[in-house]
Amino acid sequence: MVVSSICPAIAINGRKLSDVQNFSFRRDVGLAPPPLRDTVLWICLYAIWMLTTDILMQWRTPAHINPLRIAALVLFAPFAEELLFRGYAQGLLRRTALAGYGSVIVVAIAWAAFQYRYSGGDVMLLVVCGLLLGMARETTGSVVTPWIMHSIWNLYAFVS
Image (cartoon, rainbow, N blue to C red; front, top):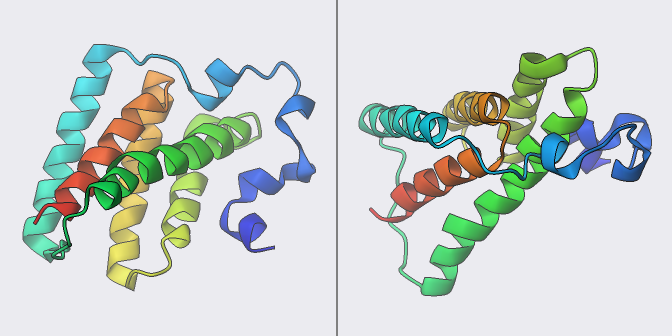
């Protein structure tokens, strides 16, 4: 119930990946190499957003250095979230009437709602982050670009 309310794409008619007509894991989930030029452009745009919001909101908090925690927060969590939200959910929603950028908006809101532990202002910040991650996924056709962007954000937030 919680998953279907947080991430509507997972609950679309209870469909499994194998049930989706003409499903391509590489194309629909976005596990494909992204164009380098577009990836660099999106990373630069995201870095500007990250630094600007940190200056305005000072959202970073001190963290304890632990290699396993760094790996979990900087590599594994962003990969899992990007694969689930920008890969699976956005990939399924773009096959609906929402199409490309409609799916970006829905997934950005769902992803921000998934981050329920943050305050309202931070969640709004995350909606914009989700929009940038989703647009990067949409324009590059790959979840690799948003994964790198998300990892850089988490690394910056972690290293204070």
